[in-house]
Length: 304
Ligand SMILES: NC(=O)c1ccc[n+]([C@@H]2O[C@H](COP(=O)([O-])OP(=O)(O)OC[C@H]3O[C@@H](n4cnc5c(N)ncnc54)[C@H](O)[C@@H]3O)[C@@H](O)[C@H]2O)c1
Image (cartoon, rainbow, N blue to C red):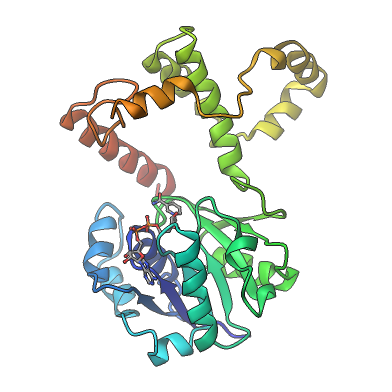
């Protein structure tokens, strides 16, 4: 099937950035559909301000990104490839796909950008479940290369393969998650690390800033180049075995969020959004942290 018409359902933060990603292929016409009027072009312009795009490139890309609030528009019916990025709510997602299925062709590929919900559950009531798959973009979607392509209990190999190819074709680094499990691949690892980090603070082993410093100046430096599996092979599986045999029994293995995390949340200490979380944050420190992350990502990913 030739893929030409891309539909992004949900024009919020992720939807806008995903639309921008697809516009890198000049063969694609992109439509963003949302319940409400939203300035898709303006949002993309401001999100992409730090990218070093060639003169006129953004205008050309935006010229292929349209917008509609009309579900009965031809732009919806003619979609070859849909990525849904509406609210993270099971009913809203199911209803969105039910409406799309009534309007799109049976072979239109359906993708959901859910962060944590099961693609099998989201697609449960659809008629053509084999063409449905999870595509978990990471925020900021226009910068982070990874997209986890998550097979549901009914996704066909062909659908997963096509989606992997389409994503690679717009510059992403898709990875296949062969089982529909909570957290897919990367968030399972990320939150295993966060659980241990919070536990170290909670148990008075080190304070919050020290925990982050310990990551930033050690294995954090290696991670963009060396994943944990290759790292285990590098140091040797005999050593890895002995380390795990000694240390694993002592690592945090709670199946519930930490009591410290709960306490901070209950006290309204929500981090950047309230000015205090594990530590206090001034508005200047918050702006600096956000700007430095963006600058770091752009510098790392778009080095000439
Ligand atoms: N924000 C993140 O860091 C992140 C990362 C990865 C994945 N996601 C996932 O992406 C999806 C979107 O997240 P976001 O951060 O862009 O949210 P958002 O709130 O910025 O945008 C959601 C958009 O969906 C629209 N919408 C809601 N119901 C709709 C419907 N029935 N039909 C059409 N449009 C509808 C809203 O008007 C809004 O514009 C969620 O599933 C989220 O979990 C978010």
